[in-house]
Length: 351
Image (cartoon, rainbow, N blue to C red; front, top):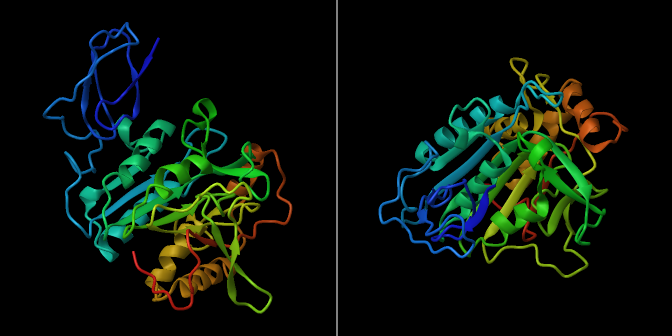
């Protein structure tokens, strides 16, 4: 039976294999020595020279103490050989990595990519690996840092159990092993990468999934009013629970509203299967619309609206995940949420 212990350095929960007397933390790479693995009252110490990171693309050793660092976590989950299989998510991950490296100068060594194509077990998009990668993303961040989280895969909803959702449902992301390990709930995502973010750090999330409108649980949602202008809705929980940051800035683009599905389709690119939202995000940048957040959102919505109908794969599979129905068809509206309201027509878009 596995015994739960805490990392002696970062205190992350770890599962100690039977008879083992040490364990390496996936997050900080510290070695925790266990005095007696059969006892719950164990003592531990950190190895002075931790081994290289199990993430091949992650920086080795402790995070470099420099400002202006760029770091990203990219997840593409295809659910291969299951009834939930998607066709465009790994393409999305590869395209997003290319964009970050070649358009926004992210070092390849500072990008963790999780896909099911990887042979390294630490780089597959399991629930455990996704959790560790999200913690890595914000660990040690400093003023001037730019962080990106991109996810392409299934999203779903489940009944809210703490009263912090206006519609009564939490939004979720589905790791590759969600059927056995469960989904990652928006409350956890917010607690992991939103609330700890310090002043001067910026995080962008690009989430291409069904029911993803408020998947970071951010306090403000950008909506278009009857006059065709963007305004902000206050989504702070009535319970008073704080869902913002510790001074940092978080802006999230998501594929659709919480009650909508996102398309996995080749209708936009005409070449290969991609997520409609990821494609529209990249295309907006390539077409020169990355001036303000308002122009980005307009371009993304226009790209999707003008596309041919498609995407039955994701929408039909979403019914299996949620137990719902397709309802109003396949239309999706990309969403913008943030920890603070701002003028989307004036604020420059920057990653």
